[in-house]
Image (cartoon, rainbow over all chains, first blue to last red; front, side, top):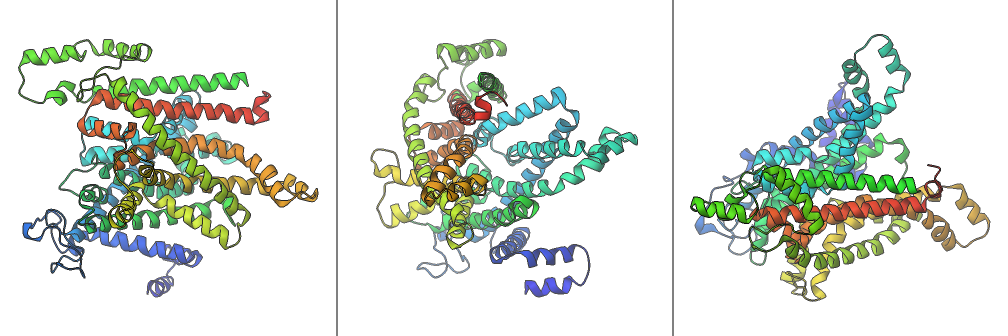
Length: 299
Length: 308
């Protein structure tokens, strides 16, 4: 069905033709990943309309009911209910939405912040370069989970702080990539020509250098979405992320683990959803990287 | 060589100093720590007493200097929660953490290096692609999800393995596998790529042309050259991954190590313990990185003989 849709769309040039080319290049696993990613995005975007119940609506007479097909199943709660009688399916859908929003925000902030620092570092050179790259080295040396835990403990676990923490995650990767590209490009004749023609530093940075660094940045962005989903769900799992009653996939697993022996379904639904997200994004990111990196072709 | 070591050590010290400073001032941003110790409803007198008790009456710069001094005299202050020296609390946690790390990293090396070599040799057939698929899957599974499913199957359904603590060898199985999961995936990839780089070198063909057996060619000529790259990866990537993974795994299985301590201190806002535990883990990672950097330089004759 998706193939037919893409085939009709491909008669028009532009983005859809690109989409079709990408689809044709993909192997089975990668096509599955594309489908899962699109499906997850749609489900997350329309979570409030798809979810059969309010994610925070409690029902004390319907606590810890198992999913469809098991004994004691309660009509209307397909994936069962949790310890407060809330619908696991509805909570998972809303949790997925929040998880993906947080991941997208975090990755974008990291891209802008790290990209800007890399750009400054590469163009300015000298002491500025030394300081920024020193910070990058320091950041690489310290596991980010520690910084995240410390920051959340200090500023409290609100959604705003969470976005800040996730935004800081991975900035050093963007900074390194952009700086490397800048240094490579700055030695090229066309940059010298632009400078000779009187272009300002800012114009060279945004008009000539940045567009050439886009492709490695896209790859890094995709991979960092997956890493951020992992980090966010880990922090929420540990109880340091988004606070109840708001749920992300990680916090559902974290809280539900107390009921693991008697009501494993509370944990299984969000855990499986996390797996779908990280698999799809990892596969796509990996594939993009292979396409972007000529040296890796054929491996 | 000496210059390289001096530079590495200098960078290590600067990084450590920056981290200590950042951690100190960051934990002071959160307002009056006394609020976390006792909450509301104490008299001003008691509050003043507690402020003096925890050494919070001095100016922030004095506190900072004292904090730096604590790395020399070993007095890292008192835990807000347990009211005993932080250094003592952390010291009790080091050995269990090391045990878990050692078993996790050993399992990783034992599994990942042979798998990586296998995947490199069989790069174009089903063995290679199967290994890489497994490695790929392992990398995308968050360690707490892996842990939850293992607990569900092996502890609650089959009743084979215990979940909480570290009292018997049986307690090691699930935490070790959880910790090793992501590490194995990462190291298998690195080993394979490092081996592929070496396998396409001219001296491999020469070694075969000399009539050496395939095993000698792969292991002696191939792996010993790839091992330098693998070693550096082990330091840079695996040390960080292992430290972060350790924190999560310990928290899941209530393993009485530094990671469990760290997460609990974060939840309870026990800042003296939190800052010291964070520093302890960060120091460990940076020092391991530095040592491996030096070992790497030693293994590379170009740096050892001072030409680079």
